[in-house]
Amino acid sequence: MWNLKKTVFIDRRVVEVHQFATNPTLWYQWYAGLSEAENLLGNGGKGTSMDLKYFFFGRDLALHVLVVENAPMEDRYVWRCLITGAFDATQTWTYVPTNGGTDIYFEMDYELPGSILGKVANTLYIKKLMYNSVEQTLQNLKDISESD
Image (tube, rainbow, N blue to C red):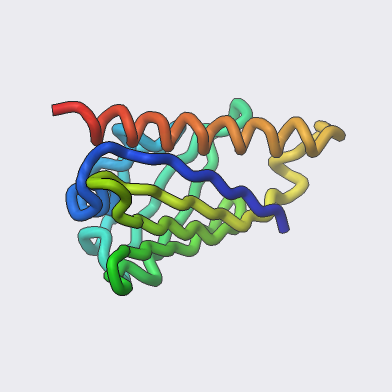
């Protein structure tokens, strides 16, 4: 199991960022490599499920996402999902109000099976690609959220 953590500051109120970022009909607009949701049941709250395609390392990976948490906790929001299919993962997004804006703390635990790694012996290369994808995703979310 691999772990990836990343943080970004968005100059927009936490309520607005959380509302936009947890709407699964909009994910494909800012989440790097992600398709539009198919078989969507729900609106991003707990229990929402959908099928997605994730384009990674030259492959079209079929994934199923189940939202297991989307709730306010004190002054912040926590959103968590389970991902199954081509790979297994848990993503946690924590939205924290900071100086009139929002700090997002992203964490993902994931396992890539041998079928994705194929003959690529250098797992550090794959980890770097995954890190770059998350970095681009958070930058996209920041750019869209901060635009008017």
